[in-house]
Amino acid sequence: MSDTPIIKRVERTVRDYPEQNVQGWERIGSLAGGVLMMGKGLRRGGIFGLVQLAIGGAVLARGITGHCSTKALLEKSRSEMDIARSRIEEAGAELSKLKTKAEVAAEEAVVNTIDAVSGPKGV
Image 1 (spheres, one colour):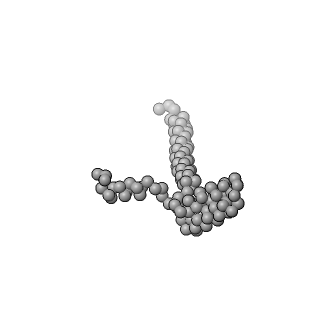
Image 2 (image 1 turned 135 degrees about the horizontal axis):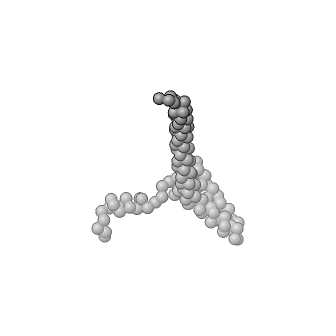
Image 3 (image 1 turned 90 degrees about the vertical axis):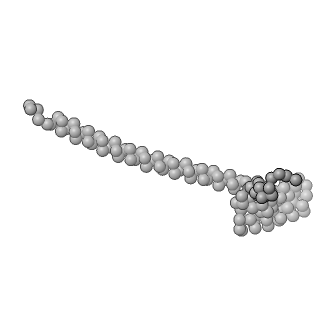
């Protein structure tokens, strides 16, 4: 057999499977829809029946495994979009703070310049 302990072998095989991202009614719908489409494809026959059989098989596999690669990609891109949005909002807040600091510094510079100009002349 293998020198790897049984627990490590089981952990390795469990991690190889993708996480389930299809649950509840969505999974039940995939199972029912896949079986229905496969049945229709078998009854129809021909090239269109074969296409319907293939699509039904993919939908059935989605329901059995509970994983949908397309849904995983959409969720990943949605989370990346949320991260980008929060970074943009943080940058906007930082820019607003910098603008406020610049306005305050400009006001102080104007006040200091007016005080320097209107100060005592002949001392």
